[in-house]
Image (cartoon, rainbow, N blue to C red; front, side, top):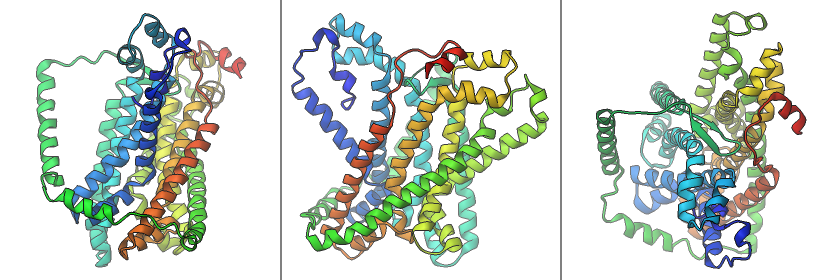
Length: 474
């Protein structure tokens, strides 16, 4: 909310209003969110393990801090992109910023926020396994221990159990997301149907969630009173950062290597994810209204199920596990890190691409179907023009994510800044580690600026009324 510029603009009737401290507060909130998401969750976990010791508490804090930064950015975009008419109307009547947010911005952006929050939860389930590689608890710690003991049978069993957990989470998230139909281009949406739940049906899940939350906080170690003191002592050792010319000169090579890993990994993910997204889109392969242009229904359902399974498998295996597998296949180095990011990115982007194609407004698609257009023609002339802004936004956001992830693949031999950071923390060279974190932050700031320039502004109007509007709009 604080980082949303729309909340601090009161429209043309108050164009001369002095912004005062509100603009500074908005800028500070955006800068804090950028810093929180700039540092990868694995790096946060590495620091918290040093500060708090081994256990689930460092992993919980690392996921919470990084997710707060990511969601702050994701939430701010739909808040800013909602149609401005209702917001300006409320400002013109003298409504406060909080009233304009509650009555105009939130109702339009809520479905998009719910959809991405569910996706963030899926990501955190996968990330929780990765954090165990630096001692932050969870199934990842067991996988790491089994690999060090060369118990590959145990590794296979643990990976299978983790994949089942991710698939169950994905199914539950998809079922909840199915209640909403959002237009992520505009950051707004409407309920596909009224969600009415009886009071008794609401009470039982609420009690279960409260019990789960209480147990989770207890298991995470939030009741340890000595933890803040340990963290304070560790934080004091990070300052001042090492800014000597000799050390900064040695950072250049791993910095460029990190950028290269993120670019190549994202390119691999885009290509593979786009190929798998087409058969994974239900509106393209499971529609029986034009059977003459498509294979048999059984074959189409098999292709749909296979594409969905491959995408789920690719994104279920954590990036660091992919790095270990790629090191076995390609050897130690930057290419193993890039390939690992590419495979995982393909699973993430393929799912987002498929769901975006499924959720475009149906009117232009139905018009083309009525005049005999094939599925590929409907994809090219109705689905793609409506979805391209969202697809570009997801792709840029994923590249930013991969840039952060490329800093940690070096922890297991994938090259980049991660290896240098890990060595500095393990050797107790905390001022050097603080400098590397600052370099990562500046790199992400530059990436945010570049992505913002590349990301086209979303159209302010409503969804297109016909396919002709899409063809003539460009």
